[in-house]
Amino acid sequence: MEFDVKSGSPDKQRSACVVVGVYEPRRLSPAAELLDKACDGAISSLLRRGDLEGKLGQTLLLHALPNLQAERVLLVGCGKERELGDKQFRQVITKSAAVLNDTGAMEAVSYLTDLHVKSRGVYWKIRQAVEATLESRYSFDLLKSKKDEARRPLRKIVWNVPTRRELTVGETAIAHGVAIARGVELTRNVANLPPNICNPAYLADQGQTLAAQYPSLTTEVMGESQMAEIGMHSYLAVGRGSDNESMMTIIRHHGGKPGDKPLVLVGKGLTFDSGGISLKPGDGMDEMKYDMGGAAAVLGTMKTLAELQLPLNVIGVLAGCENMPDGNSYRPGDILTTLSGQTVEVLNTDAEGRLVLCDVLTYVERFEPELVIDLATLTGACVIALGKHASGLMSPNDSLANKLLDAGNESADRAWRLPLWDDYQEQLDSPFADMANIGGRPAGAITAGCFLARFTKKYTWAHLDIAGTAWRSGGKDKGATGRPVPLLSQFLLRRAGVAVDE
Image: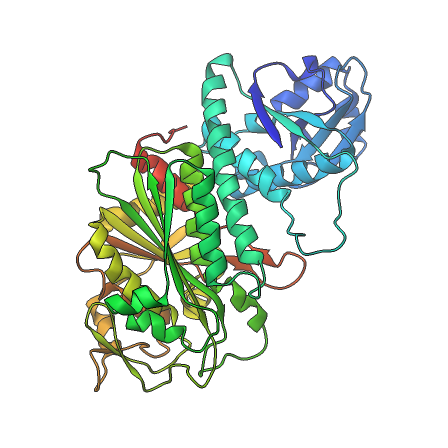
């Protein structure tokens, strides 16, 4: 898919299709007004007859309008103008992309980026348009014997900007949007794979493949013998019941100066989570292949970093593991000694992600990081608290938390901050070890964050619980979302000083 920007009047476009908006009730956007004037009121005449009301998501494809050089005009309903916000704008773009792909038009000029979205400028609208368009075209059919392909798929969209002065900003927005979308696509592809293909070794292979594709990346893999040698016993305990070896993959992006401290991203990579001895219910267990959504998102973010060649040193860690029931599995009642030396009483083997992450969060101390962000499909409690709309964010550092929240709002990949007060820590008390691995049902997402916080005292840290946002359940829309790659990418764009405030 190719994208470009230009500045010009819609009635002068020689294109297979020109796309313009219509507000409710039957009110033409400025671009649509210009088209209507050029074709002697043909568009407004159709609207008066009731062909299109302008409700959000409505579309009307018109052919061979008089006095226009475009072969087609696609009218897209935008709802009420004063209600056109971030979500509605993405819906308009997504709907237009879907319709365009079925029209037979192989290229189009879109004036939807001229629509007024409160507090959003040219850069934001074009970048979101690119990301939403590519997301709408995503299909995971790798393992299907028959693949559906459009007869004449849309191959190019040109987005309009108000004046030629905005062309450079538009081109930057396209570059950023495409790079982020490619990271999202990689995340979704890896996460959607079945667990008989995507195991810890597959994650490691993906990390090595990425390093072979981009000069700024290097990858190393640690197996079980290396982890045992340094004392990562908590991590290793989780994978003991699986025939698939646990593997930790470390991907480095060398974009900054050699002496710059790295930013570290840690992704939970449970390629399948049966719950272990504390076996999960059978209903929906197939979706536990998505328990590596954090690792997949780190992989996708590293691809975006490399695509954009951001001037940062970033280390991504994929904590690959599989939690299975077996005679050798770890059990409720076991006490594990973590890499940090702290001990943990296992009360539930289905609270395994934190047992993997705690050792990784200790391991990354050796990188002397500027900051560490872990992302994990960690708790069902976070899904209950926030649903599928926002990732749970926890951090003892207000500055880092606020920057991540802002990045989420800017990227349409939002998070919501939950507290990490010491009041919750007592729920993790154990009579036999330094702590238990669960704190009971109350505030389950928060106590999981409190558990991780005990292993992050030596650096600035934030935790993203993406259990509700990393994938969609059930039905035809089931599948990985690619979140929080857009949030992390926006955070890193700002960190690198190359974000655009428009």
